[in-house]
Length: 195
Ligand SMILES: Nc1nc2c(ncn2[C@@H]2O[C@H](COP(=O)(O)OP(=O)(O)O)[C@@H](O)[C@H]2O)c(=O)[nH]1
Ligand SMILES: [Mg+2]
Image (cartoon, rainbow, N blue to C red; front, side, top):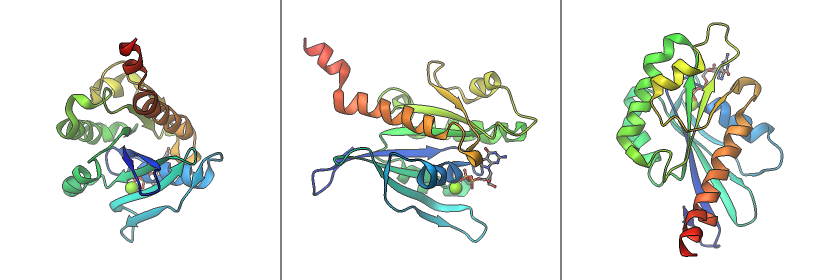
């Protein structure tokens, strides 16, 4: 979380996950098609084939004082240092997995790297929502197998999505932003503790 010069609060949400899982597609959908969010421009830094080479970024404002700065990382192996940088100061995570069976190893590798960067803050200090994308493909892995492979805590919310059609994407974004607000603005457990 950071406060800008005008006193607005910015929360940072990052889409993570392996290359080609659908991170950029999901952010584009939020930007282009979701009503009820005030939106700034979408900045994408991609190579000519459309692969994210650095990150994508779009700010969304929920209210006049609260903004969500949403990023996607570049998923290819060689961009590890950039991912580490983008994840600095992250307030909430959307992990996008690719449901195709041949993406199993890539999904696991990205989840392992995320734990390497953020450790046990994942799902505790930093809320996480798991996004199981490409559920429109006929040969998809089962939800159970995918969640077991990823190895995140079993109480973490997982949502089936089809990013190309926008199915489930808004719900995933709302879920993680709600968790961030509960944790950081209302500090529900802190208030309880003070009573
Ligand atoms: N069938 C299918 N394809 C998808 C879905 N989401 C993304 N894609 C495709 O997967 C490819 C990679 O998507 P992209 O958003 O660039 O992935 P990123 O590397 O994670 O940013 C593109 O060709 C997308 O159109 C989905 O839900 N279903
Ligand atoms: Mg991308």
